[in-house]
Amino acid sequence: MAGTDETHLDDLRDEYRDAQPPAAPARSARRGRAPAPQAAPLAPREFARYCWRQLTSMRTALFLLMLLAVAAVPGSTFPQEGNDPAGVAQWMADHPTAGPWVERLQGFHVYSSVWFSAIYLLLFISLIGCVVPRVGVHARALRSKPPRTPARLDRLPEHRAAVLDAPPAEVLDAARSVLRGRVEVRPEGGGGQGGGSVAAERGHHRETGNLLFHLSLLGLLFAVASSSLFSYSGQRLVVEGGTTVGTTFDSFTSGAGADVGDVPPFTLELDSMDVAFEAQQTSQIGEPRRFAANVTITDAPGEQPREETISVNHPAKVDGTQISLSGNGYAPVIVVRDGQGNVVQDGATPFLPQTGNYDSTGVVKVPDAVDAAGDPVQIGLSGVFLPSATVDATGSPVSGFPDLANPVLVMQAFTGDLGLDDGVAQNVYELADEGLTQVLDEQGSPFAIRLRPGETVELPDGLGTVSFEGVQRYASFDVRSTPGQSAALVFSLLGTTGLVLSLFLPRRRLWVAVRPAPAGAGSAVEVAGLARGNDAGLAFEVDGALQRLRAALGDPGASPPPGRVGDDGREHQRDDDRDEREARAGSRAEEGR
Image (cartoon, rainbow, N blue to C red; front, side, top):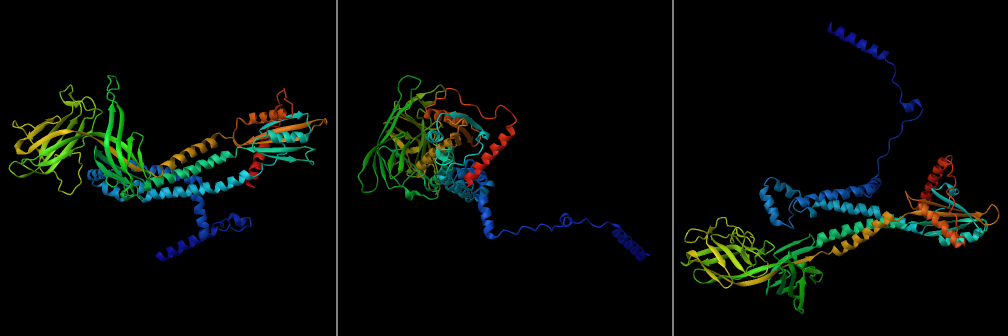
């Protein structure tokens, strides 16, 4: 029974298939046409040309420019290795999980990363491919003749007609002299006796401005790239009477193509600081009035020293490297003697200003001292320097004026391991008091050191003495080289000029057609104009051309020039629109040729 049922089902399927109508033939087969052949795959050379055209399109250039701006965002989000290595280390410590991933993705050196450089390079190539071919096209357009004169000038957007009392040849000569831009006279009928036309075109430098803007953008990108690659910046603090050389810095950052060896081997000695503050009892009291550093610079070993005065916005220069005054402050001269009476610290210690009145903080680290019993001990002093000490409303000591009027040094002392032997770099202006023991007085309170110039205080527990010998000034210098800075300024100005030209310079074409007047005396003149895009000044240009033509022929034309032919009826509107489109198409075709 099973076999019989299966046979019966097969017979039913066959009958169903036979009852179905035949499948409809393909549309191309019904119409007697063969199916369209599939496009052959691109050859390698054709594919490369296709990729090049896509890369050098303006759409791609704009997309890459936007992508570059987006790619620069991580550079302001994460600390950068070249500018803030301490910040990078702190970020890695605060984010132990995300830190290694950010490092792998080059997030701590974004502007020299592979992916940022790739976008930058592609943008360069795209802009070059967009702009450079247009330069040749524009150069040929500048040498080309004005477009042919349309047969129906009355169908152009602006049209004026007049009858002048002068022969056609004279009118043509006058039109050539009054029209602006590139002008070409096209006589008809031999020698211009039977009339002719004059074609003029102006505003080509609108495209010149456009090209200048894009070329300046290329130059600006190149200048920024060169500055990022080959620039460097170093900071150095020098106390009065001190000397620094061009290879020694407190901090130094540079691009991928520069290092400290590129700094000129100059020598700078700070002779004195010239600083003044407003002392009058006004709202400006305490404001800085003069900052200047008197220095002696030797450009290279063996050369003659020269004296310079470096002030705000007046840097010194050594072989293109700029030395600027970036800051100043006070350096108290502190002498520390240990428990055995040995001088273990003697010199000016810079204190960093924290307020406008120069409340300054600083530290003194003494790693090699001994106490009265002869046991080795490390001493750390931390405190503030007040150039004009006073007391605020809460009773705390502060500085009431930035100049030296009542200098006071207030410090606290610590003992213990300062960490100077651990091999880890430390900030010389901070004292990490973790693991240190604060020195206490007899009552068990923190021992306070309060000194004026010339005073000495003895530390408890036989640790020695601290003396405040005097105050010197210091200056902070910024040594910087940015090779692309001047070029970036020049390209920015050129780009602005090109943008102004491309936005405000109109592109216009004017034609003057001259024919003998129907009455036999004088000439029938038509003046018409065509602009690229909307141009509200085209009508004034056409009116002005006709007025100048009248004046050149001695016919001032007291009555205003007639309006546009055909404006009194709407039946010509559709024809005018069509003729305008034809004239624009003809002009574009003429440009293409």
